[in-house]
Image 1 (tube, rainbow, N blue to C red):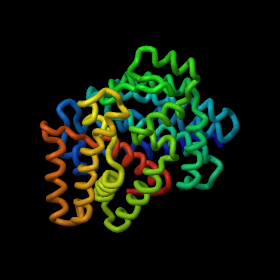
Image 2: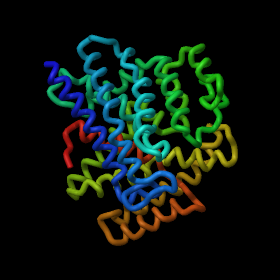
Image 3: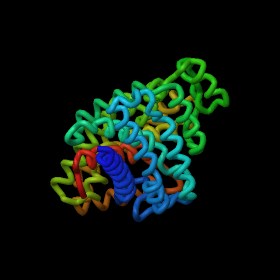
Length: 334
């Protein structure tokens, strides 16, 4: 039986690595790194390196899920934050391209633990995976919150802004850790507050609603119709972007006007919604399945990465990655 557990953990790890690699390979995902476009300091190869480097810590999270399923540990002892922190550190050892995978790791680690928790099932299926994910996140602890705070600092994340509420600590403050300890705030608690201006945080407190209800279903539908994983990946990106304005863009735009993150996102959403409307137009033109759609998509990609704009729908890309991981865990093969 132990060999079966190890095999399952290996498969969950490989699903995560493949999902991450497929996401960055989706071309052209407008405004993001892909096979034909790099950023100044971050290249396509950096994302590939990071996609492989996350493997061991995804596997460890999966094994913790298996242990919890066997009642060897409690859900609260999975140490989700620890695995996030260690994965972030591992990636920095394998490339020099900066923060490439923090968002993906935040989504993948709970997914891996939740998949491992299904060891007693004959197969991983979306409803059970989503139910487990909600349980895993609600059982996170203040130590998970502290570890994720450390991971954010190590990643040198930009566009965080300042948090001016009493409910949770300002993560940019030097006393954030002590406040987390004082209030015994779990990772779920922090994500709940952050969900008002960050779609990754919202995913972690809603059972990954966008990933499961939109991303996963769109991916399977387009892949079944086209037989082309690149088209499926790009169209899933465009579909998510069209329906859920990218919160990274909203933060970056808004923070030029105010450092209060909640106010900044409200300001930046106006620009983010314009980008969402453009994604919707491209889909109506057929996206990668039509000549006009491809032409407009290439134009949109160049516009977003223009030095005068530098608008990167990075949160959308991370949710595409989690959608891919769900699909692969549930049996999709490319």
